[in-house]
Amino acid sequence: MRTSTVVTAALLSASLVPLAACTSQRDPVQERITNAARGTSVNAEAGRIRLLATRIDAPEERKLLGGSNTGLFTTLANDGDTADRLVAVSTVYARQVVMRQGTDGTESPVQIEVPTAGVVSLQYPGGLHLEMVGLLVDVRAGRLLPVTFRFEKSGSVTVNVFVDGFGLPTVSPVSPVAPATS
Image 1: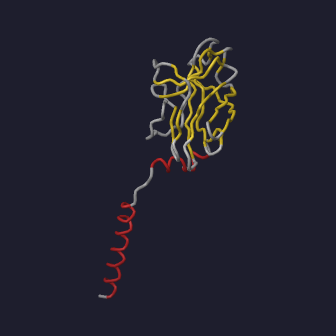
Image 2: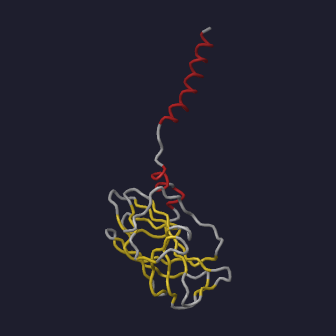
């Protein structure tokens, strides 16, 4: 009888462990920020802001013509304990870099709030993203272009951004935090 009591107690203990794990709430934003795989995809850091999966899209024929516009996509992860703001983006290869909501949205100056311990995805042409306007030269896919990102508190960082063709895989979290546009 003693053996069955020990076995019963062991089985009860083992069944309670998964239940205890279910009661704790996981923070999905923090999980995206601290994800070890995401940490290795960092393109650059400015202070406590990480730029992830930063890329420039090229059309299927793999060449962007001077005078055209193209998407500049990235994800911003704030590992800090204070919010920051992306206030400017520039490159010598385009007349300007603007913020655009969707494919037909109006151009506006870059002002993107990156909340404390938050993630902002600028990865989708149909959503909020950056756009290089008025390319100054023809650009082929497979090239690296220097792009400077300036943050209000974290300063500036220049990233050599890869120009890739449409349809190549990207890494992007779905952001639960809508970036401020004011």
